[in-house]
Length: 442
Ligand SMILES: Nc1nc2c(ncn2[C@@H]2O[C@H](COP(=O)(O)OP(=O)(O)O)[C@@H](O)[C@H]2O)c(=O)[nH]1
Ligand SMILES: [Mg+2]
Image (cartoon, rainbow, N blue to C red; front, side, top):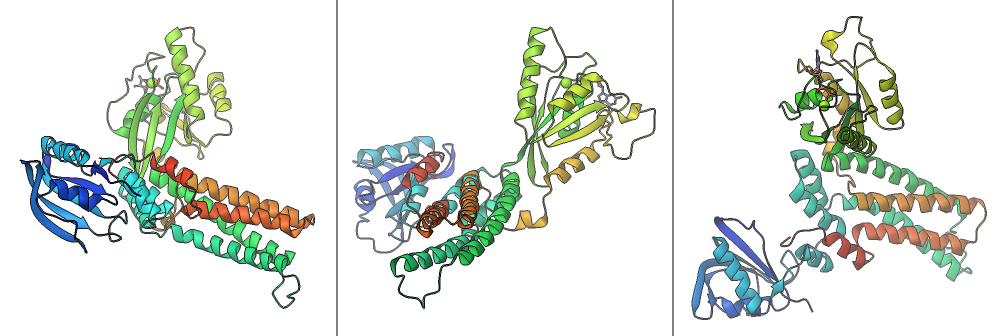
């Protein structure tokens, strides 16, 4: 039994029109109680014109779309009421719907029902959220490919080959007397595991790239005081966002900005200069800088072009192991010859193009990363990593001669994890967790 849910599908603002959406088993029955026409007999998708009523009181003149299941987004009987876009009107429509037996939809409940009724798989449902939140054209394009089901197709080969080998092993375990059935020998298992490991590694690699295009990356600007970090932020943003002075310790709190480089959102964080400081406020700022540099994807390590000292060396130590770019600022003041391998810029002269290019190079994105579907979702990538680990384990176990039924159970586990990527394992708990991140009305 699917209760009838109601929510506003358009923004809660004044506009020309608003859409109130209902979906559920009793949807047509409930709507007929407050609409001027009886829609309970609807057999196919139909458009109506009529009035929303609360008893004798008319609330609005509307256009109503009735979708007969299964030909609706959710796969249930659904209604979209197009009213005039005044909050007074759409809120009243929701109120009468509630009064007549509907209940408010929870976060992502429409998409979750579409998933439960087999209209969307989990990857597609997740992509709806990505599509709505996409900040660049490029990110929107990737999310759309996922919604269209192109991304889920990437999982098919894993599902197929693991499914094949599992059934082969099962047959061998259950009917050892049928010798003509192809033997699921170790060689075959090893071959399939190796093929899948290779394929999954590529999916993960591409997925992480896709994830950068979809979600952007965090870049921290760090260095000792006065090297020009805030000036670099301002030059990259092309605005005077952070305060710039020649007083050491000017920046204390983290200053944020956002730029779009080749369709990738770069979240920039200008930080307090790192040095020994006895000033309480500055010290807190420095602690923030260090924690920011630790959880950034890329760190821009800024130095003065002219001379490096022990303070700079401390910074180099701090960013050890991070994905980093060494930036030599104040190129305009450089008295000696430029070193050919170093990246020189002048934030003062807004000469930061080489830095932008260095960030783009670090991202290492190819045309394929922008044009092809990829599994760019953290949950999905996590599952791929699990599957890969299991298969790597199976390879070791085959080598050490573990009995086939134990290997079989590991392969089964890998297969189940493959199904949970698309939600075909009916693991509704994962689904719940995902849909709770949606906003109501989707
Ligand atoms: N000559 C020159 N001065 C710069 C450049 N970048 C920043 N400065 C100056 O260096 C001082 C410190 O800059 P600021 O951006 O506040 O450094 P921060 O402490 O690292 O954030 C200011 O006086 C800036 O005008 C540059 O490329 N060339
Ligand atoms: Mg600063």
